[in-house]
Image (cartoon, rainbow, N blue to C red):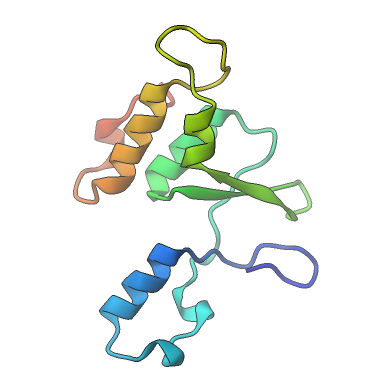
Length: 125
């Protein structure tokens, strides 16, 4: 959700919608976006290192991260898939910033809700 001034007010994903509909005893037409979206939104900056974004995704257990400029305006959305497509291959192909292991460890942390992320990852080590 973005305000009239381009500021991110909240984030909602398809998963948020399905979880909300599955956990509320209400029909979909009675549930609003405002009830389901994450507020305040978890974000990063365009000049953050990739490992910082991975740490945030891991800690918050999210797959998509809004990227805001210094004025708080939305510049884009960074996804785990974006990072995976640019990850360093085992054969040493030059793709800067992040390894496949870093991205896979982040996905594992996002998926394991019963384990604390700090015990799983070395992403920002």
